[in-house]
Amino acid sequence: MTNSVEEERSYDPYIFWISAILISLFVLWSIVFPGNMEDVINKVFSWMTQSWAWLWLLTVFLLVSGAFIMLVTEYGKMKLGKPSDEPDISKFSWFSMLFGAAIAAGIVFWGPAEPAYHFMTPPPFFGGEGMTDAAANHAMTTSFFHWGLSPWAIYAMLTIPLAHACYTKDLPFRLSSAFYYVIGDRVRGFWGKVIDVIGVFATVGGLSTTTGLIALQFSSGLKYHYGLELPQYGIYLIIGALTAIFTIAVYTGVKKGIKLIGDINMWLFIAVFFFVFVFGPTLFFLNLTTNSIGQYILNFIPMSLFTGGASEGAMNWLGGWTIFYWAWWIAWAPFVALFIARISKGRTIRETIAATLLLPTLANFLWYGVIGGAGISFDVTGVIQEHGVESAVFATIQHLPLTPLLAIAILFLIAGFFLTSANGAAMALCMFVSGQEEPSKHIRVFWGVALGVIGAILAGTGSLEVIQTASIATAFPLMFLLIVLLFGTFRGLGRYRENKLES
Image 1: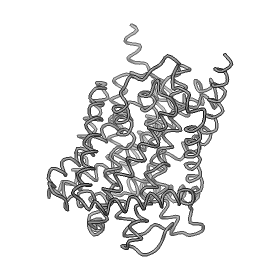
Image 2: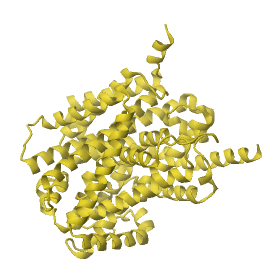
Image 3: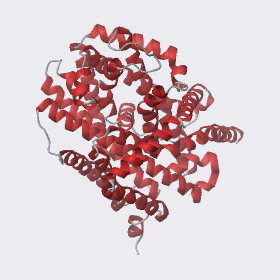
Image 4: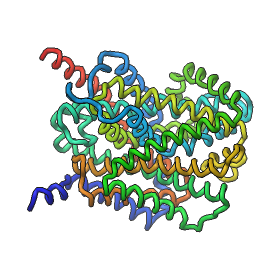
């Protein structure tokens, strides 16, 4: 057998087949017993959110603390790579790619929807009466909390050990490599395979969750804005088209294409932001955003650790919002961290954390302050009640000039962000099971199709709760790994730095 053939077929059979079989069983279960699947998933949802809410919150808070410690201390000067390694991507393209892969279309989906929803139904942390000035400020502050420092710290604190271990220890690009500073060379053995299987499940759950949400939003946009009511199978056509595009991209390895989509999406993102800012209620945006940032800073620690005590209503709200978000971001962390690690060679830890934690937080604040502020100002709560949260962005742009062009831009943003993320997720899955930067094309196709199929199953339920629960269930074991990783990273990087200073 030639070397090229060996390379083409090279993959870890344990990681691949265990993951593939278990995921296939889930798909079969979903098709044959859909009612039973929904019932079980909802029970899992209740248990994981009510019994473990305190740990979800504490884990993410510790990750934020760790990210800031690493940012401002001597750790920040360390390079993700060897002393001679230098970045090979411009800063703008680097940030565009990592932001697009990490945020996906979630920011377009929830941008106007979440603040409007909280404006209508105030979160339990603040309470009070809905549809008031105070409710508007509290709604935006809560949205900032869900899309601010906390989720981005999850990505940053997994990216750092993964990139450092891969580039300085020549380890394969797998989730398990991030745990080198925790278990050492055992990442190459049994425990490393267990970690990678967990990474596969978290990635499939996280991206499939997004696939379901995006399909619902696309369908809603076509119906609400264009009056096109898709047939019952229409949502599968949308997912099928998106799956085909990113599977082809993954199969062909079109790096330039993904980079181009990332750049275009970032410029379009900026253009839509400024358009709404200028033609919307600008003064309202400025006042609301400034006030909400102040509230966010003042209440960050209390909000981060808020469980509602013994209140059942607060726990239910946390499960549907904060815990869902934290789990969703944790589920995304393996493939996002791997993607960021691959494009961050030669960057310092401080530079990487700034680009992964601070800049995206600022971008989200600005986007939510304007797009979310528009949803509150134009009061799209009635549309949300009638057509669901997925219709909020299209209801918002109805109040602005050039609505047809804005609708096209929004649809492109949704597709562009999603394709960037899906490409990164599919490639990450391939790398988890192969350990290679350029995995077998057959494996690429398998995981591309698998992501689409599971996303179609979740979207086909028509239930946002089922989609949310799938994300929480797959992220649950990874939460425990992140706690261990946080402390192991500081210890491992500290020893590495000491050895370098002594040599």
